[in-house]
Image 1 (cartoon, rainbow, N blue to C red):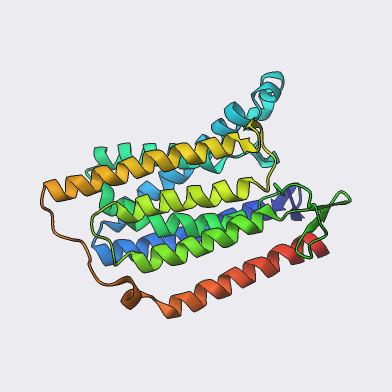
Image 2: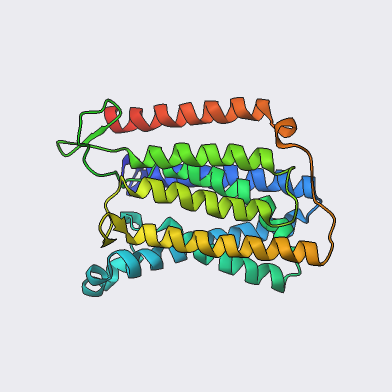
Length: 282
């Protein structure tokens, strides 16, 4: 991981800083949406904190089992050394979603309304957090100017590819949040959108391959997309069967938050500048 500075024996890494900033930004967006929807802020804050913890555990477990089980069987003590890297965002997504569904049902929190409130919060957190990731892409076939030199090789900046795609998805979700026809639609859009982003970026990363250029992460993305699509159909049919009122039906173009578009554009540019500044000059 990229070391920024140390305080005594305590090391501060770039990834830790960006993850922390991503979590804070996500909490802020989630609370804004909780206010707009009239949801219990305290309950949602508890849910968010617990889900982050479970998400980290899930990310670690999935990375160990799916990406490098042999190594950790030989070095079991390193299973707990997450400070050395080794987290799977898809494992975090799966574990966090399953836990959140269970927790919301147990605490009588409206599941799909809450899921929609969390959707833009999760993706903005992922966008910011990805900036500090230390997993670069594969070597570039040509000398593109945006490549990052690591160990004498020019690599694809896979982190920034995914971060930019996630910022774009946040913009879509943020503007679509007032244009959903049934509860849960925004969350399903997030799940499918993020999985598409991850599927695209995976072509520029190096992970265990399954068939040809298709990696294990590609398989995860496809599986999640299929499950999310089926869940979306079920939610839509449930909504129609129960004859529930349309949540919002304002034309999308009329709801575009242009001020927000400026903010997200600035955030994207700043993220790119910070990414290259740190990896080139530090």
